[in-house]
Length: 205
Image (cartoon, rainbow, N blue to C red; front, side, top):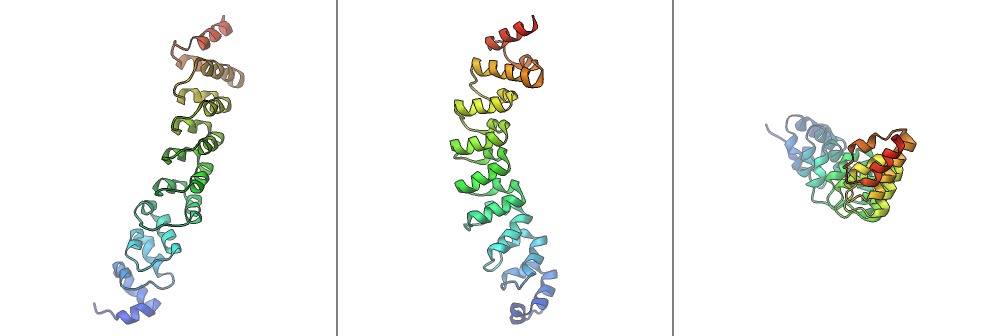
């Protein structure tokens, strides 16, 4: 196939006609107008071949294939990443070295995304637990304040709390009884939590 490359560089319709059967030619010249989207709809990874793609072009490619975020060797603004997370929260796990601002936004949108954050600060953990107390199971070494916060928001989080104290378990059983009119939580707790089991016996004797 003989291609007029000079025309390819300047004529949008001619360029599109060539790209229909040869999308890999996207690396021969900067794509005109919507021709980049035309290629990326079918082959999002071709953004890596394109000549000087704009951030909008990268955005379009990443929305179509989230995994690209982890392999594109280019730094984007926080706003770029936040915009992608707004479209699809699962994009967060592919972002390399997200800033605190991006992490904060991510756990606000979907608290359980904290499991993908390596440097979990107290602020991020607290934000996640406030939004969804069960996200404590993804928090690394949460302190006592955060554990208590999760328990008071939902006593069933006690099953996801490591190094839980006798008092924490007792309060979880009490709150479960008050809120859910049930003490079934006790059936799933080891006998070593003496205070909770004693409390249960008092209730049922």
